[in-house]
Amino acid sequence: MLYRKLKTLYEKVRLQHYRDLFSRVKERDGSLSATEAYAADVIYLLGSPTVSAFADTLGISQPNATYKINNLASKGYAVRTASDEDRRECRVSVGERFYSYYNTDYPFIEKSVEKLKKDYTPEQLALLEQMVDDMVRYMEE
Image (cartoon, rainbow, N blue to C red):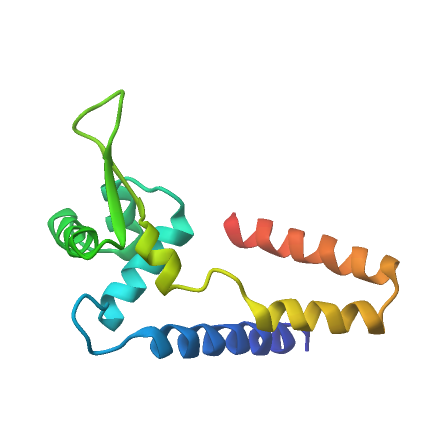
């Protein structure tokens, strides 16, 4: 039962994410394709990964990852930064244009939390918060 409920929650969040993502993918000069939008999203979610960490996460070759990153950088959605310690290593992060294109706030989650605050006690919400923290930790293991 719990598994089904969490699966449903996960699917609702994914669906909302895809709605948001595809509502931004437009056919105009300098816009992102769906694949590029996903790649930019992965960079954002990883923080500031190395090119090889980005490639490993997506299960693609390093040249393919470099190609995707270069396309994003040429459009202003990604920024490449050489490592100070090892000039051969390069980190990639999202550029300013990404933040104007991609909504990093999640109003549907914020609204849901506000409704939960009305329906549950602070103690119940604290327990939920602890459970979510544990779930995230277990997923990272």
